[in-house]
Length: 275
Image 1 (cartoon, helix red, strand yellow):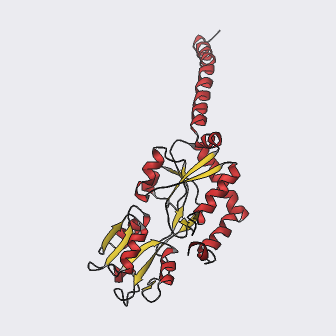
Image 2: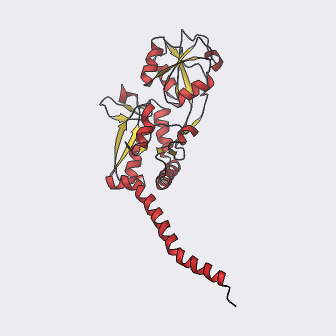
Image 3: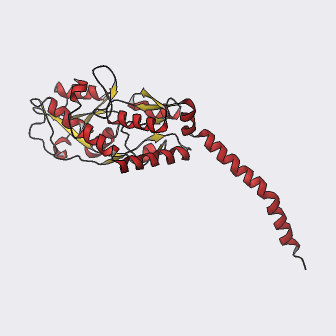
């Protein structure tokens, strides 16, 4: 005896299978067509959103961009067989600029945070950074701990929209924060003695203290946070996440990232480029 119900179910599955395959194919095609990797290859250029942070990205004496991030982006472009176009962008607006298509990827020392991850996708970390502090010798005389700076009458400058701002709000909730669009403005306030300290990603505070040893010092022996740094891309692009992740894994394995980190963060061999 035939089970008519099973027969009808089998016929139904057979009829639906081409439709399911078609839909799966369309979904795959749509995702593939939307991948920024294909767009980069088609345009023969990768557009990189970045902002200036010493020594991540800065201009040399000829006005050419140099730094750790710049080397990373140039190597990435070389491995993809395309040119690279840097798109300097104010840090406070860099994620909205990515989301509206102003560039393809952010390679700008961006810390991976849950709040940012709600808006963009991050790759696996290609570096780790942390927060440090440079202080004014007279205004912060005798200060040697976060508790010394965590007081209402202490002024701390940070670059707005950065993880430095988040760290300052978290670890120095009682201090008076002064927010600036550019890091150079925050450092200028410190040099003029208008704030007690500047919080920023390492190694900038150490470099700046070494530049003005008679006026500034580093009050904390170690960084007080540790944060992973990744590429940021628009959401909904699994091919791009896969490609960039594997590129980063290979650059860790080859020693490229370690070599560049040592040059830009552990030496001052690049100083003559920017003086």
